[in-house]
Length: 389
Image 1 (tube, rainbow, N blue to C red):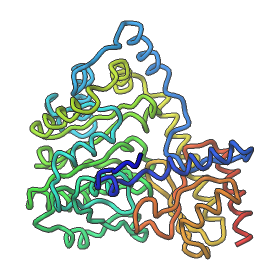
Image 2 (cartoon, rainbow, N blue to C red):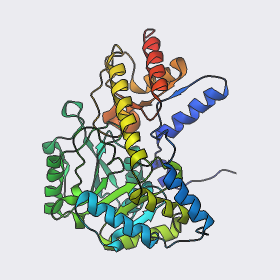
Image 3 (cartoon, rainbow, N blue to C red):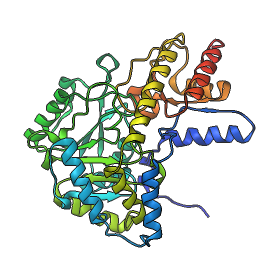
Image 4 (spheres, rainbow, N blue to C red):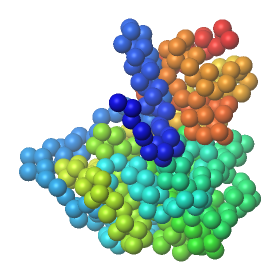
């Protein structure tokens, strides 16, 4: 039978990290040893007190449907957390809990964007932004992030991209794939335009707790931005809870109602026992989370030094997240070709910068959410393999 798919499926992209992981797993099945530096997943276990809260919830019978927007105790805990971290207290009706953070960006774009509406998004950037914009028929407008500016945008360039059709601005700090962070001044530039032009901002802050230098500045905290911001956050990165599938959005109440309806039409709700574990993540002890951050800092310093020691590579020090984004333009290979070469010849899985958009060409993304031993092994393999190019 020949299946005729909807035309929109041609516009739907993917997250290349999972494709590279599949190729790496296939090589491992053939007996190859692969060093995984491609996937953005903490290699730590979920902190014990969070696991215990989930187990306790299961034993207590929290295995049934929850309200589509999430259980009230978790939504109230999110309100408290947003207030304590960003200095603005939303109403609980503005909070929607979802299975992972991706549904917030997917549903928000689906709810807001009509054909040919324009969305400004960071490039290089998380590939799902551009994928979903294209999928719904919007016009994806890339905002370049420049290495010479610590992978931040040019205010003048940003302003030049704003038109009467701009419906949404997406920002991400700390940033995937570069590890850059936006300053308060950067956020003020975006907020000024958003207020003047009545444009919503989707602020992806899932790495907000993984910062090594400076501090996290949220556009949500700026005057007049609470009613113009979709705050996207989650539990996967900070608390090593990728498999629990937990995210949330804080947004204007009218939009929250639309997102809740999209939840009802797709997922029904987020797993109830996971939500009880999330309460403990927000309110419980932080020792294990603090230890993860310090280990990430150690790994960051090792991988940046190692990358800068490889001929043809140069890497600025990321200030947040757990990614390094070295410049490889001096190596006589394209980014995609270099990704393939390092996987097949060196046994090291990394991602081409082009997986994050056209402005990622000439770069590779390394995830240092892996052990020091594996990071050092991967660096040594790459250094040796590149001698043959």
